[in-house]
Image (cartoon, rainbow, N blue to C red):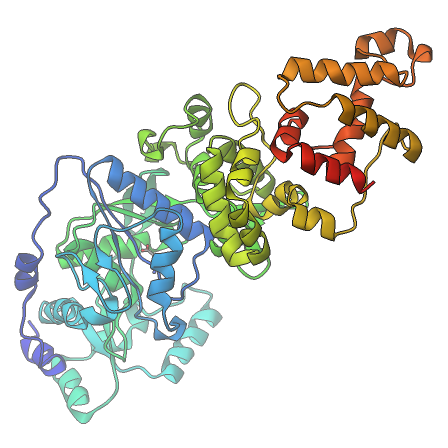
Length: 547
Ligand code: GLU
């Protein structure tokens, strides 16, 4: 027992672990409810892998009637930025990921298991460290950086496992009175775990994705409390996930090698282990070979990339769900309009090998997602994006709100829904040519096809205007197009033309192309009949006059 040493090191810590156990009792939740947490450092940067994890945290808690909380891991002060917490909260809100407990801004928090910012939990960690010292399971280490270097060099020479353990852990073997003396003298120290592990023993661990894994026991006397009085990730993980009553720790697979240490920490602290889901690293295909998606090289590694490019949050989350559970894609096909919460994520179905992230595939998903939106939603979401990223387009959309919604509504229902928009940054390309302000103030490059002779084009347009009536139904309208075709020596039907290509200049499609290009400059637009109707006769005439 080292009560005197513990009191000397932590004189201000008066609470005991039992006090905290009472303050943070087991959560009163229904059987099977998962308590998950998203635990970022407050760097403000949200990696797409973190978004993947946070989405999984949120989904699993929601679908089981549990709790998903946010915990800010700021014990490594180096990585902090001003406003880092807000950036994370808002960056995830963009994707509809919100938390039941945790910080709600830089200064406010909600929930009964806080504080949810690690730097505000110093006393709690120190209380548990103090208790471990009392039990002889932790000790102060006075080794300087030079001494630790010398140990490492010796180990390198001997070609043995590096680290602070066994005979190399010199401070573990100091007597209590030696430790007391050095603390009193003012020698700087940190607190280390006195690992009870043995190199010859193995532990078994079960990850929900990877199944059973065997590891050698931890023997390292790892640092629990650093010289600044704050805990290391490992110690904080054990204390926080225990006291916050996390049932499922979802984190990146880079932590799996720390499992033996975490198992041991939970054991010496007398805590029950949570379940673990170590998520696969998000990979990218780089010219045929797979590599980790990189913050430095790949703009799509940042969650903000999607907002900046106007990829709807629904599409990004749907795509992450595809990567998460391969059966999601099929489910989505069958339930294109269903709320995400109707899909039950199965953690056992998550692949354990690197998850391949493919922007081309995301683009496809996004086209399908937008195809399920109403014209009004496309207008609203597109406008919100444009207000931030394309002010000029936003102004036009607002000025011509009804017209824009009508245009967006073309081919929006039925069995041939338009899939021409993958992201809001493509809206300009899809809309601008229909606004007169843009059309008449800019040089238009007409993409003529078969008919290129100006005189003939003008004659066709004149004739067309003679017969065009905006009140015609679609069949009547198309019949009139055929009449014009015939008049100019073009076949009324494509079939007719194909049977006798020598007998005609072209077919009705070539005539509608003349009309379409004269009206918009482009060969591809949504349904021409609808575009004409929405522009109205006067504007059609003005546009034709520009030729
Ligand atoms: N703060 C850790 C990280 O950013 C969290 C890991 C965890 O979820 O436990 O990697």
